[in-house]
Image 1: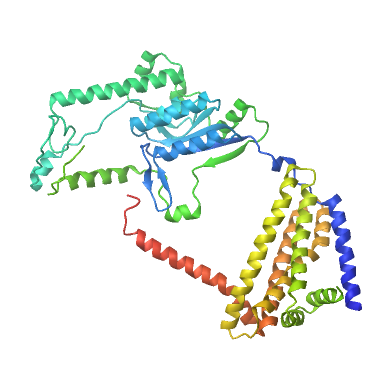
Image 2: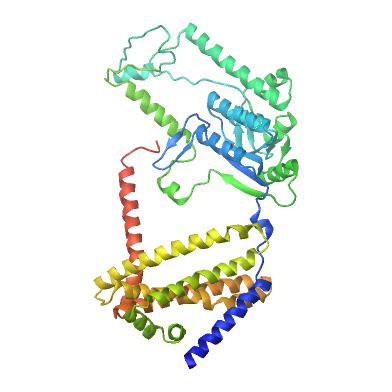
Length: 309
Length: 193
């Protein structure tokens, strides 16, 4: 009887508590349950190269495919009102920069502003992306500029002679092995490459002129390949505001009318599993160079497979 | 009903003997009632917090999901722990352990008065108070689980703790082995090159 009484008393206390909870329980704020207006941050780190980048066991990263996918996620998220493109890149390939730049333009055309925040460096291809956004923030000492195009070419001819390698090719046309490292470029080939570089340069100039609303001739003056500090770039009209990422976030919030502290959503952050088994986020220049060197040296091997450059 | 109330009293104040009795008598019906109450009361607590907000609409499906998930874990837990307890030299039945484990959901019900008191406290301390209550529920539930293993299989306290930890230890071991294996296997491939 005693046991029952104790438990019944407990049941009564619990019952009263449950009723009491109706009045005293901390209310979950409505704001927690509705979708906040957010600002997305998409990171562009390292060299901008096309494709899937480095493919890991469970992930891939570093290539523009991943970057564009992240931009699409931010575009498709209705709660994301603006996108911050956080660029820390020395540049990359022209096609890769171009395809990301075109996606940025489409996102802006769809009504979602994109704001650039430059970190340590946003040069060359990094600036190409920035020029495709609505507003550019840079730190006063950010390194930017390097506006131009070059096509690297190494001539390993003398080295091959020293180590006794003589590569022979059966070509379908005279320029099929253009930029081949085992011989000197001919004048005709140099002219072909120069025309290509000039064409890419003109495309770059056009992107900057349109994106920054600058006269193309002025852009050509600025785009001689030199680098600028953030402050110099602002004076030249290549940057809108001096400030860090948080200034860019505040600017983006003002631009889209978010009151108070905006909620931030970051794309491209890796979880533990991805860190263990995934690909690296960025391309390291020395790794790329090592990879290229390996490919070049392997092509000097005795394999009879047709080579393609 | 009378027996049920007395069983609850014993679980509260004499947990080991109570668990032994529950396992021996295989009080699965009472355990199921305890389990259901243990599921309903926290849902009520959540309802009081969500009342008047759009989130309340998903409460029904949340309860169903929690009920099914917890029931699955209860059955799976009883099977696995019974197997390990038998390996550890315990003598008991899976049904007995299943019934005893059902009563380990009791703390979820009993702490609700503490929750109401915590809600009445100033904001600065109520968060801490809720944390402490959560800790109390977790520790109490673990103690009752250990008591259930001891009572149902006649094991010593240390063995019962080992039986309870064995699945976790096995999982950690398998994970470490998998990481080492995959790490050494991946090292052979220049994936990051």
